[in-house]
Length: 321
Image 1: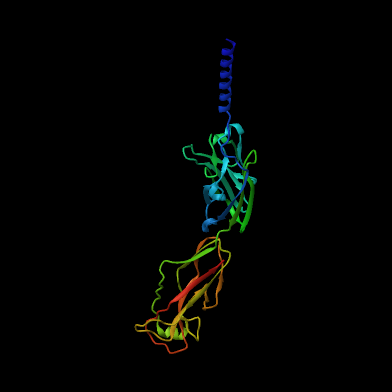
Image 2: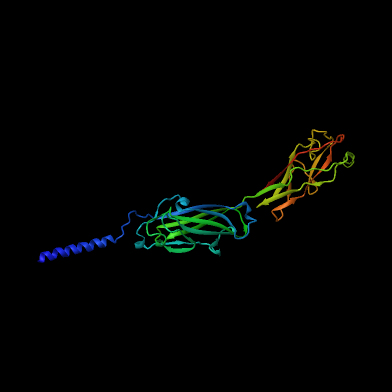
């Protein structure tokens, strides 16, 4: 009888031991500590200067694996046992809702962590935050499951050129098994200018040949040329074309039908004659689009004048930085 009882007790003890072992989480894959750096290049767009405050000037979203080149395990399936906390922090001054200052005056940065794993709820946290890893998932998490979204936001008048920004420990786990740093380079908006004309052809009124012969030039007529510039510190204009060898400021008559002779065309900027190869610096007002004080006129050459048609072709070039 005693032997029978012993067998029953042994079986019960064995069952209890098996149940305890079943509740113990044994990680299938060890998690190695990782210190990752996200390199981020922020190229400010051409319209940076004219964009209103609050405009998102730059946006990039990608997985941590894509951003760092590291496809690795962040947390294994023993999340409840290890009780890890994922933190996102910004080390600069807050300048708005979730927006923090950068080394570029007038430019803020907003960073968002996005959990995007198949068959799991989509979740987002704007930095800074502190969340248990179990709020993301109850199973293993890799660098492919977490995304980072970076937004550069205009917070005021932007000043400054190219700068580098270092944000250490942008993301981290409380046991330091994961540390993600940000190395950001902000590139100033590229300068850009363009010449705009409603009609590239300028038609001048007919003028009496005797008037040109006596006065040497006619009155000047507006060319209706506009200049559109962004992020430009200085600019100059120059002209090119088939100009006269003896009088370089005058462009030769290219008409083939009943062509006049002894007369060409001159271009002026703010009343001053333009000559090919001699660029003129121009002022840049605060407005980005304004009319250039450019005009054209008839001009006499040092030869006999003959009545007829006049046609000249002038190329206007803008140099800027």
